[in-house]
Length: 160
Length: 472
Ligand code: SF4
Ligand code: SF4
Ligand code: FES
Image 1 (cartoon, rainbow over the protein chains, first blue to last red):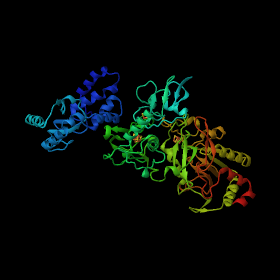
Image 2: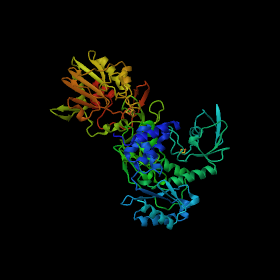
Image 3: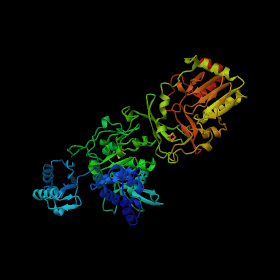
Image 4: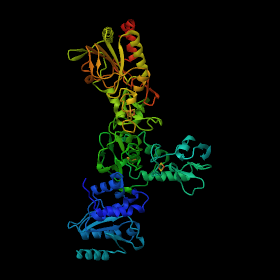
């Protein structure tokens, strides 16, 4: 099979290897690294990681599907993940979600046709003190309300 | 020896034994789902809660090893409440479709719900639903009934040597399936259905054929290869519905292969010869036992006769045949046949490092112990008589006349002249010796069909003209 992951990926893994007691512990960092390269994790990439770590591709899939930060489907340039767990929910996350859906013209779990935004629901970002919160790619956006969410989306749109 | 107390009873244990095993010895059954004695312990389902003195919270018995002086309670209020809570969670999404579920009657979920669950349900939300997944020839998966115990995943990984079942996503969205919905590859897939504690992994071969509680069960041994896996034949009204493995830690542990599990089908094949028959032209025509036996008797008086004996026969049958041949056919030869390329037990090796052996008959070792030599290559004689239990691979035969005694399907014996129908392994008692040299008993599960007769009876009739006239 043709290699899907770059040398850079393998170099990064080489550096990490000594940090862990066994290679299996590298699954999470490997998935992160691969996602950095691809933006998401296609089947072939999961298989290649499995081969590299020495476990069945199925196990990689199990891990990758357990954590919501790994994307098993392609995502847009801006991935907005709104937390809808207890604290955020009590502070209006559902309203934020439906606002975002209307604003972007997509449903939760979908990507806009220009590939700019993907909208997802998140189970607890651990940001209960600043609820409601969302993750936009790697950044936290906290203490949201409809105005600040609107402002954020506008800002990102204009950055393109 | 170290001792602990379970529900007031003192029990001895060997260090490293978990509370489920120790409790069992004290006569206390602890309900489980994810725990299986043949698989690693994961303590996922939380069904096996027990109270251990001096421990602040309930413990899972499967992952708690007995310790000296430990005091365990399995019926306290706290335990009852804990188990009831677990059951409530496990049933949140369950469709409660026992009336149309194959597992009903032998289902851990049913039994544990009855034993530890509440009769009432507080949940009124929508249940998650999935469509059935076709997992190949053996298994069909109904995810709605699954409780995510992961026994199937561990079975594949740890026993069948292939990680083909996976748990995708998590929590309420979890899906236990094959990777990318692929078909199962293992040749041991039937075990998935046995170990599933719910009706989630159903055996296609058995689906909707019979309610479990109507089946009668007969303990016997698989004849599929020289491993001699212990199994149970489940039958009703003289028909077999399925075979399942029986525990034998020295031979097959808790498992059996699909080849052995489904092997019994040939005994119910419509093409099986169930009456004495004779070749007339290209077609078979029925004859009486008397005619058949007379043919056998007169033909075998010929000078050059070769008797062949399948290594799928029992020790009792083999020695009766040997006795008859050495007494009455002094010049004839007696040789065994069984699996092409595996003539002796020295050639009989493990086929896959799991269970299957290369010898595809159950009693190669038995034939050797009786000193019966194996046929090499072609069977060549004026007259060849083939005794066969039903599974031994027929050799190439070059003869003027060929007579078969035992179990044959029509398509297997196009070159034969006379067939005297015998009993399959499901229809007789007897002894076989497996590749380790262990003697094991076959037991009759179903009665002989139509005009089939046991080989010892055939031989007796052959010697005794009078009885034959009366009987036949
Ligand atoms: S399919 Fe059966 S064995 Fe597999 S996880 Fe579900 S309940 Fe357990
Ligand atoms: S391994 Fe051999 S004895 Fe065991 S179930 Fe399979 S065929 Fe039968
Ligand atoms: S049997 Fe102990 S937790 Fe499942």
